[in-house]
Image (cartoon, rainbow, N blue to C red):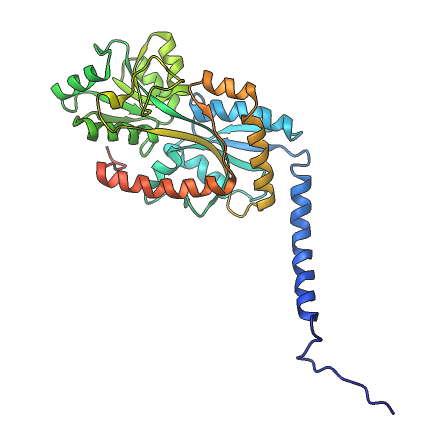
Length: 336
Protein backbone atom coordinates (compact mmCIF):
# COMPACT_ATOMS: atom_id res chain seq x y z
CA UNK A 1 0.00 0.00 0.00
CA UNK A 2 1.34 3.37 -1.04
CA UNK A 3 1.81 5.62 1.86
CA UNK A 4 -0.36 8.79 1.58
CA UNK A 5 1.39 12.04 2.33
CA UNK A 6 -0.46 14.05 4.92
CA UNK A 7 0.06 17.77 5.19
CA UNK A 8 0.00 18.92 8.82
CA UNK A 9 -2.87 21.27 9.66
CA UNK A 10 -0.48 24.01 10.64
CA UNK A 11 1.67 23.82 7.48
CA UNK A 12 0.36 24.94 4.07
CA UNK A 13 2.01 24.02 0.79
CA UNK A 14 4.63 26.54 -0.41
CA UNK A 15 3.02 29.68 -1.86
CA UNK A 16 -0.49 28.73 -0.74
CA UNK A 17 -0.66 31.31 2.06
CA UNK A 18 0.54 34.10 -0.24
CA UNK A 19 -1.99 33.14 -2.91
CA UNK A 20 -4.76 33.08 -0.30
CA UNK A 21 -3.76 36.53 0.93
CA UNK A 22 -3.70 37.96 -2.58
CA UNK A 23 -7.14 36.48 -3.26
CA UNK A 24 -8.52 38.04 -0.08
CA UNK A 25 -7.07 41.44 -0.97
CA UNK A 26 -8.49 41.21 -4.48
CA UNK A 27 -11.91 40.30 -3.16
CA UNK A 28 -11.75 43.19 -0.72
CA UNK A 29 -10.75 45.71 -3.36
CA UNK A 30 -13.27 44.58 -5.93
CA UNK A 31 -16.33 46.25 -4.32
CA UNK A 32 -14.39 49.50 -3.76
CA UNK A 33 -13.15 49.53 -7.35
CA UNK A 34 -16.66 48.87 -8.63
CA UNK A 35 -18.11 51.63 -6.41
CA UNK A 36 -15.56 54.13 -7.73
CA UNK A 37 -16.13 53.10 -11.35
CA UNK A 38 -19.89 53.55 -11.07
CA UNK A 39 -19.75 56.66 -8.82
CA UNK A 40 -21.92 58.69 -8.69
CA UNK A 41 -24.30 56.36 -10.55
CA UNK A 42 -26.94 59.05 -11.00
CA UNK A 43 -27.20 59.79 -7.28
CA UNK A 44 -27.15 63.47 -6.31
CA UNK A 45 -24.11 64.82 -4.48
CA UNK A 46 -24.69 67.20 -1.57
CA UNK A 47 -22.14 70.00 -1.32
CA UNK A 48 -22.50 71.73 2.04
CA UNK A 49 -21.53 75.39 2.34
CA UNK A 50 -20.96 75.99 6.07
CA UNK A 51 -21.93 79.67 5.80
CA UNK A 52 -25.04 81.64 4.83
CA UNK A 53 -25.50 82.58 1.15
CA UNK A 54 -23.52 85.54 -0.12
CA UNK A 55 -19.88 84.71 0.58
CA UNK A 56 -17.13 83.37 -1.63
CA UNK A 57 -17.56 79.79 -0.40
CA UNK A 58 -21.16 79.93 -1.55
CA UNK A 59 -20.56 81.53 -4.96
CA UNK A 60 -17.66 79.22 -5.81
CA UNK A 61 -19.50 76.11 -4.62
CA UNK A 62 -22.49 76.97 -6.81
CA UNK A 63 -20.40 77.71 -9.90
CA UNK A 64 -18.20 74.63 -9.57
CA UNK A 65 -21.08 72.44 -8.39
CA UNK A 66 -23.18 73.15 -11.47
CA UNK A 67 -20.34 72.22 -13.84
CA UNK A 68 -19.32 69.23 -11.72
CA UNK A 69 -22.84 67.82 -11.79
CA UNK A 70 -22.99 68.10 -15.58
CA UNK A 71 -19.58 66.43 -15.93
CA UNK A 72 -20.52 63.53 -13.65
CA UNK A 73 -24.02 63.23 -15.11
CA UNK A 74 -25.76 63.92 -11.83
CA UNK A 75 -26.93 66.89 -9.77
CA UNK A 76 -24.87 68.68 -7.14
CA UNK A 77 -27.16 70.12 -4.49
CA UNK A 78 -25.84 73.13 -2.57
CA UNK A 79 -26.93 73.23 1.08
CA UNK A 80 -26.10 76.30 3.20
CA UNK A 81 -25.59 75.35 6.84
CA UNK A 82 -24.15 78.40 8.61
CA UNK A 83 -23.29 79.06 12.22
CA UNK A 84 -20.39 78.95 14.68
CA UNK A 85 -17.88 80.29 12.17
CA UNK A 86 -18.57 77.45 9.76
CA UNK A 87 -18.25 74.70 12.37
CA UNK A 88 -21.87 73.52 12.34
CA UNK A 89 -22.06 72.68 8.65
CA UNK A 90 -18.52 71.32 8.57
CA UNK A 91 -19.21 69.01 11.52
CA UNK A 92 -22.31 67.70 9.74
CA UNK A 93 -20.12 66.54 6.85
CA UNK A 94 -17.56 65.00 9.22
CA UNK A 95 -20.34 62.74 10.52
CA UNK A 96 -21.74 61.90 7.08
CA UNK A 97 -21.35 58.52 5.41
CA UNK A 98 -17.94 58.43 3.70
CA UNK A 99 -19.19 57.48 0.25
CA UNK A 100 -18.48 60.62 -1.77
CA UNK A 101 -22.08 61.83 -1.79
CA UNK A 102 -21.67 64.41 0.99
CA UNK A 103 -18.92 67.01 0.64
CA UNK A 104 -18.13 70.41 2.12
CA UNK A 105 -16.85 73.59 0.43
CA UNK A 106 -14.34 75.35 2.66
CA UNK A 107 -11.74 78.08 2.48
CA UNK A 108 -8.63 79.01 4.44
CA UNK A 109 -10.91 79.72 7.41
CA UNK A 110 -11.15 75.95 7.85
CA UNK A 111 -7.54 75.95 9.05
CA UNK A 112 -7.42 79.34 10.77
CA UNK A 113 -10.54 78.45 12.74
CA UNK A 114 -9.10 75.10 13.79
CA UNK A 115 -5.82 76.76 14.78
CA UNK A 116 -7.38 78.71 17.66
CA UNK A 117 -10.45 76.72 18.70
CA UNK A 118 -9.81 73.72 20.91
CA UNK A 119 -13.39 72.53 21.25
CA UNK A 120 -14.48 72.15 17.65
CA UNK A 121 -16.98 69.33 17.00
CA UNK A 122 -14.49 67.74 14.59
CA UNK A 123 -10.77 67.17 14.10
CA UNK A 124 -9.64 69.26 11.13
CA UNK A 125 -6.84 66.83 10.30
CA UNK A 126 -8.33 63.43 11.10
CA UNK A 127 -12.03 63.75 10.23
CA UNK A 128 -11.67 64.81 6.60
CA UNK A 129 -10.05 63.85 3.34
CA UNK A 130 -8.99 66.57 0.96
CA UNK A 131 -10.77 66.30 -2.39
CA UNK A 132 -9.68 69.21 -4.58
CA UNK A 133 -8.75 72.87 -4.65
CA UNK A 134 -10.98 75.26 -6.55
CA UNK A 135 -9.32 78.67 -6.38
CA UNK A 136 -6.86 80.94 -4.62
CA UNK A 137 -6.47 84.69 -4.25
CA UNK A 138 -5.52 87.66 -2.07
CA UNK A 139 -7.75 89.68 0.20
CA UNK A 140 -8.86 93.25 -0.49
CA UNK A 141 -8.78 95.84 2.30
CA UNK A 142 -12.02 97.82 2.15
CA UNK A 143 -13.51 100.61 4.23
CA UNK A 144 -17.03 101.93 4.53
CA UNK A 145 -17.90 104.69 2.08
CA UNK A 146 -18.19 107.39 4.75
CA UNK A 147 -14.79 106.74 6.36
CA UNK A 148 -12.36 109.55 5.44
CA UNK A 149 -9.73 107.07 4.22
CA UNK A 150 -8.46 106.60 0.66
CA UNK A 151 -5.16 104.75 1.15
CA UNK A 152 -3.59 102.20 3.46
CA UNK A 153 -1.44 104.94 4.95
CA UNK A 154 -4.60 106.94 5.73
CA UNK A 155 -6.16 103.99 7.54
CA UNK A 156 -3.08 103.32 9.65
CA UNK A 157 -2.78 106.99 10.58
CA UNK A 158 -6.45 107.13 11.62
CA UNK A 159 -6.16 103.91 13.63
CA UNK A 160 -3.08 105.22 15.46
CA UNK A 161 -4.95 108.39 16.45
CA UNK A 162 -7.78 106.37 17.99
CA UNK A 163 -6.55 102.94 19.24
CA UNK A 164 -9.49 100.52 19.33
CA UNK A 165 -11.84 103.14 17.89
CA UNK A 166 -11.77 101.69 14.39
CA UNK A 167 -13.65 98.39 14.15
CA UNK A 168 -13.63 95.64 11.55
CA UNK A 169 -16.01 92.84 10.66
CA UNK A 170 -15.25 89.21 9.87
CA UNK A 171 -17.17 86.07 8.98
CA UNK A 172 -16.63 84.75 12.51
CA UNK A 173 -14.07 84.05 15.24
CA UNK A 174 -11.06 82.23 13.83
CA UNK A 175 -11.93 83.18 10.26
CA UNK A 176 -9.23 84.01 7.74
CA UNK A 177 -10.60 87.58 7.76
CA UNK A 178 -9.80 87.85 11.44
CA UNK A 179 -6.32 86.37 10.96
CA UNK A 180 -5.53 88.73 8.09
CA UNK A 181 -6.69 91.80 10.03
CA UNK A 182 -5.05 90.85 13.31
CA UNK A 183 -1.79 90.22 11.43
CA UNK A 184 -2.21 93.73 9.99
CA UNK A 185 -2.79 95.12 13.48
CA UNK A 186 0.41 93.51 14.67
CA UNK A 187 2.55 94.39 11.65
CA UNK A 188 1.38 98.03 11.47
CA UNK A 189 1.39 98.63 15.22
CA UNK A 190 -2.29 99.54 15.36
CA UNK A 191 -5.38 98.26 17.16
CA UNK A 192 -8.70 97.76 15.36
CA UNK A 193 -11.58 96.13 17.23
CA UNK A 194 -12.97 92.81 15.98
CA UNK A 195 -16.72 92.51 15.37
CA UNK A 196 -17.49 88.92 14.25
CA UNK A 197 -20.55 88.00 12.19
CA UNK A 198 -22.06 84.69 11.13
CA UNK A 199 -20.72 84.55 7.61
CA UNK A 200 -19.34 86.86 4.93
CA UNK A 201 -22.78 88.00 3.79
CA UNK A 202 -23.66 89.66 7.12
CA UNK A 203 -20.08 90.92 7.57
CA UNK A 204 -20.23 92.67 4.19
CA UNK A 205 -23.69 94.11 4.85
CA UNK A 206 -22.34 95.54 8.12
CA UNK A 207 -19.66 97.41 6.18
CA UNK A 208 -22.10 98.72 3.57
CA UNK A 209 -24.54 99.92 6.24
CA UNK A 210 -21.85 101.80 8.23
CA UNK A 211 -22.03 99.44 11.20
CA UNK A 212 -18.30 98.72 10.92
CA UNK A 213 -15.38 100.66 9.46
CA UNK A 214 -13.17 98.03 7.82
CA UNK A 215 -13.43 94.62 6.20
CA UNK A 216 -10.48 92.61 4.87
CA UNK A 217 -12.13 90.11 2.54
CA UNK A 218 -11.80 88.13 -0.65
CA UNK A 219 -12.65 89.67 -4.00
CA UNK A 220 -15.76 87.48 -4.45
CA UNK A 221 -17.10 88.68 -1.11
CA UNK A 222 -16.26 92.38 -1.22
CA UNK A 223 -16.27 93.45 -4.88
CA UNK A 224 -20.10 93.60 -5.16
CA UNK A 225 -20.16 95.98 -2.18
CA UNK A 226 -17.39 98.10 -3.68
CA UNK A 227 -19.27 98.29 -6.97
CA UNK A 228 -22.26 99.83 -5.18
CA UNK A 229 -20.12 102.69 -3.90
CA UNK A 230 -21.05 101.87 -0.29
CA UNK A 231 -17.56 100.49 0.34
CA UNK A 232 -14.15 101.55 -0.95
CA UNK A 233 -11.14 99.35 -1.72
CA UNK A 234 -7.82 100.80 -0.54
CA UNK A 235 -5.25 97.97 -0.79
CA UNK A 236 -4.61 94.32 -1.63
CA UNK A 237 -2.90 91.73 0.56
CA UNK A 238 -0.74 90.06 -2.09
CA UNK A 239 3.01 90.71 -1.96
CA UNK A 240 2.87 92.41 -5.34
CA UNK A 241 0.19 94.03 -7.49
CA UNK A 242 -2.41 91.46 -8.50
CA UNK A 243 -4.25 90.99 -11.82
CA UNK A 244 -7.37 90.59 -9.71
CA UNK A 245 -7.28 94.30 -8.81
CA UNK A 246 -4.40 95.87 -10.76
CA UNK A 247 -5.20 99.41 -9.59
CA UNK A 248 -4.77 98.54 -5.92
CA UNK A 249 -1.39 98.85 -4.23
CA UNK A 250 -0.20 96.05 -1.90
CA UNK A 251 -0.45 96.61 1.84
CA UNK A 252 3.27 95.77 1.92
CA UNK A 253 4.04 99.13 0.25
CA UNK A 254 3.14 100.71 3.59
CA UNK A 255 3.61 97.73 5.94
CA UNK A 256 6.79 95.95 4.76
CA UNK A 257 6.60 92.16 4.82
CA UNK A 258 2.83 91.95 5.15
CA UNK A 259 1.19 89.34 2.89
CA UNK A 260 -1.93 87.19 3.12
CA UNK A 261 -3.51 84.80 0.66
CA UNK A 262 -6.35 82.32 0.84
CA UNK A 263 -7.71 79.27 -0.92
CA UNK A 264 -11.03 77.57 -1.55
CA UNK A 265 -11.50 73.82 -1.81
CA UNK A 266 -13.65 70.74 -1.22
CA UNK A 267 -13.36 68.11 1.52
CA UNK A 268 -14.98 64.71 2.12
CA UNK A 269 -15.48 62.72 5.32
CA UNK A 270 -12.52 60.61 6.44
CA UNK A 271 -12.85 57.06 5.21
CA UNK A 272 -14.10 58.03 1.75
CA UNK A 273 -12.50 55.53 -0.67
CA UNK A 274 -9.33 56.80 -2.31
CA UNK A 275 -10.62 55.87 -5.74
CA UNK A 276 -13.69 58.09 -5.29
CA UNK A 277 -11.52 60.93 -3.94
CA UNK A 278 -9.26 60.72 -6.98
CA UNK A 279 -12.22 60.60 -9.35
CA UNK A 280 -13.71 63.71 -7.77
CA UNK A 281 -10.31 65.43 -7.79
CA UNK A 282 -9.91 64.89 -11.53
CA UNK A 283 -13.46 66.03 -12.20
CA UNK A 284 -13.02 69.25 -10.20
CA UNK A 285 -9.72 69.93 -11.96
CA UNK A 286 -11.42 69.41 -15.32
CA UNK A 287 -14.07 71.94 -14.28
CA UNK A 288 -11.86 74.73 -12.88
CA UNK A 289 -9.34 74.61 -15.73
CA UNK A 290 -11.92 75.38 -18.43
CA UNK A 291 -11.59 78.87 -19.88
CA UNK A 292 -15.12 79.66 -18.78
CA UNK A 293 -14.29 78.94 -15.14
CA UNK A 294 -10.91 80.70 -15.33
CA UNK A 295 -12.73 83.81 -16.53
CA UNK A 296 -15.36 83.38 -13.83
CA UNK A 297 -12.78 83.25 -11.05
CA UNK A 298 -10.91 86.32 -12.30
CA UNK A 299 -14.21 88.18 -12.57
CA UNK A 300 -14.92 87.24 -8.97
CA UNK A 301 -11.51 88.36 -7.70
CA UNK A 302 -9.68 85.04 -7.59
CA UNK A 303 -7.73 82.61 -9.75
CA UNK A 304 -8.32 78.92 -10.39
CA UNK A 305 -6.12 76.50 -8.45
CA UNK A 306 -5.37 72.79 -8.76
CA UNK A 307 -3.52 70.18 -6.74
CA UNK A 308 -3.64 66.44 -6.25
CA UNK A 309 -5.78 65.29 -3.33
CA UNK A 310 -2.60 64.19 -1.55
CA UNK A 311 -0.86 67.55 -2.01
CA UNK A 312 -3.98 69.40 -0.87
CA UNK A 313 -4.10 67.20 2.25
CA UNK A 314 -0.48 68.10 3.04
CA UNK A 315 -1.21 71.79 2.46
CA UNK A 316 -3.98 71.67 5.07
CA UNK A 317 -1.63 69.98 7.53
CA UNK A 318 1.06 72.62 6.92
CA UNK A 319 -1.49 75.43 7.25
CA UNK A 320 -2.60 74.19 10.65
CA UNK A 321 0.99 74.32 11.91
CA UNK A 322 1.52 77.78 10.41
CA UNK A 323 -1.66 79.37 11.73
CA UNK A 324 -1.14 78.01 15.24
CA UNK A 325 2.23 79.72 15.23
CA UNK A 326 0.77 82.98 13.86
CA UNK A 327 -2.05 82.89 16.44
CA UNK A 328 0.48 82.63 19.24
CA UNK A 329 2.69 85.40 17.81
CA UNK A 330 -0.19 87.80 17.11
CA UNK A 331 -2.24 86.86 20.19
CA UNK A 332 -5.24 85.81 18.09
CA UNK A 333 -7.87 84.13 20.25
CA UNK A 334 -11.55 83.22 19.95
CA UNK A 335 -12.57 85.95 22.38
CA UNK A 336 -12.14 89.41 20.88
